[in-house]
Length: 423
Image 1 (cartoon, rainbow, N blue to C red):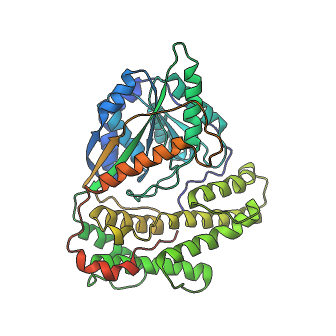
Image 2: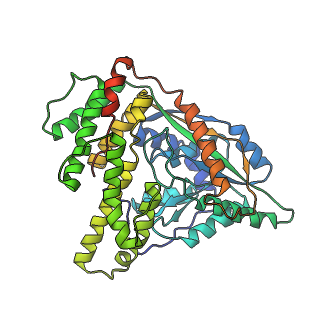
Image 3: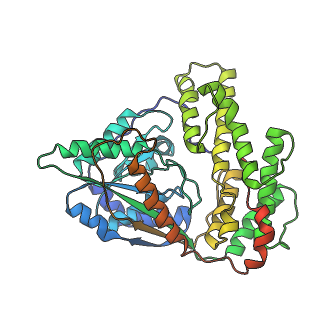
């Protein structure tokens, strides 16, 4: 399990309001260097930049809401900020401020402030509302709340984004003269221009060796991915059910996720929950972590709770594998995402393949009403944001290269679509 849960009392990290370091970091090209170093991003393109410039010129409070396929996404906004040009503020998960003092310093200097995703962080929410209502810089919030590596699908969006936007709009409407708050969804897409067969072979061979298999190079690539994925899923089914399961891949994934979450939800929340996995995971962490952070549990109970956290983390990993992702559109980029996710879920780290281009596409502004819509389960603003993001993602997906010679492999591969890796 990756080190994303910090077992100590939360302390809010405020943003730095100065502009010198943000300006200098972008001027000397550190965001581009960091993207090359961490993800192998060698090219970038910002589209729709005039839309953001118009909102800045109009003096609006601006909220940017991107999808979140990779951990490097926030760094990519340094490229956008340099090109507009503008400085930004950004809400960042607290665990990112525990990855060394240099990282913490850089996040703050670029306008980042912390949010405790394992609870209701009123200070972060208030800070976000104040920054957005002041309108001095665009504010970035990733509404998915976590990365998925699956670039062409959205995870569940957190409705707290709408609360922040509407609260800021209400404050801004009281200004003299009154001001507006707008949301610009931003679609992020990574395109791989390298040799996908070579990249996939390197990753799959390492996983196959871990299985004590001979490399399965005689198989077509999609079948090989499916075989490795089925083995990874089967290992987790053996661990939790005592035997591998049968049936459709989607049913097997849902069965394992419910098996992982159900008993824990019944204990901590009183009943088994329904709906998308990421919000269910967050609700459980909010209940499990406080006593651990306070140090009020003994060693045995702490160990038991860490086991619960590991199980719900696995459920979240499983939820990031759409069963039809390769069968529906076997592009080069989707293949890369799946093999990277295999490797990351199995080894907690994915290698850098390079040859990536990142595209940031800025959508038209959505004006935010200060009035909350009552009597609905989902705020209409979140519906608009989700629709805008998915529309951009669908269009950007068309720019991916199709996997060569894929047609003969599609039929046999549908029952062998990649399955999740373990932790």
